[in-house]
Length: 68
Image (cartoon, rainbow, N blue to C red; front, side, top):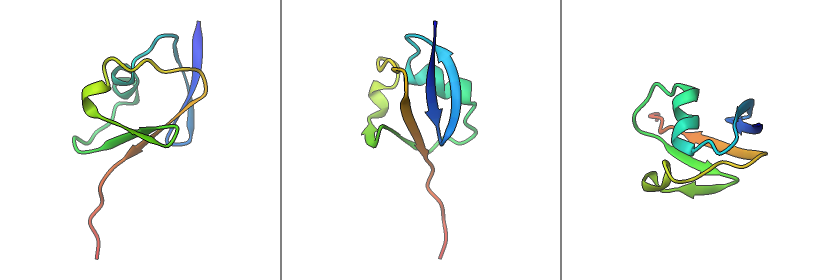
């Protein structure tokens, strides 16, 4: 069975019981410094592997930017 998950506003079908770590690997993130929020709540990096995604989760990947 598959679940619908939004990652940075794009809809993805992922396997049921997919962890946040697995979803990030699927997303193929090209940066090393980032933060993740699920449904508006920041997730500690230490929980990425254990946290199982649910249908309709909204994942925001937040990447720091320089500017001035």
